[in-house]
Image (tube, rainbow, N blue to C red; front, side, top):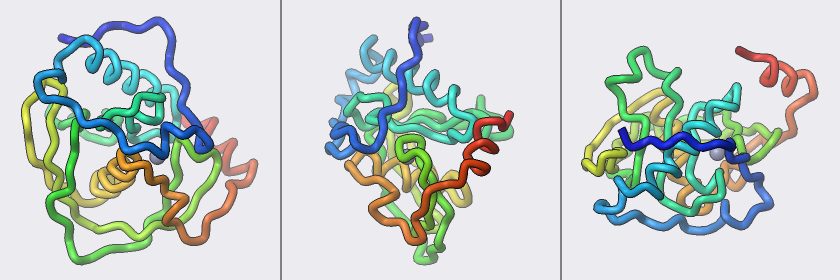
Length: 179
Ligand SMILES: [Zn+2]
């Protein structure tokens, strides 16, 4: 496998950091298997795993302005058969139906709000081996696709949210003590 162990977990950058507002760079498909990109993917998995409430992370959230997001294996029943890495992802189709979804972000501690999201989304992306694939999703995964792809274009959920508020200390403690 391409993953290289890194010694230190990269911290998750917070909303005042300009890297979160930049348009992330696309990656040449031939570069996907390079050590540099594989290390970033590995760092993303590692940083995401430190967050109790983390279901996905985009590369800018660890300070790397590239078009990559990764999804936490625990959201799937059988993660070995699922795509966990999305490179140069593009939304190619959405359902007409949308809904206000409750949302937070690892880079916007500790805010929550409601964002209008399409219920079904189809994404085209490259996986960590450099193979292109298309995936349709509904439910949580469709929600994740939209939030993470926004990150790759410098958009945060707080830009779109209604009912935006700070979490109470009790709610924060609940997140921190999960697992
Ligand atoms: Zn986020």
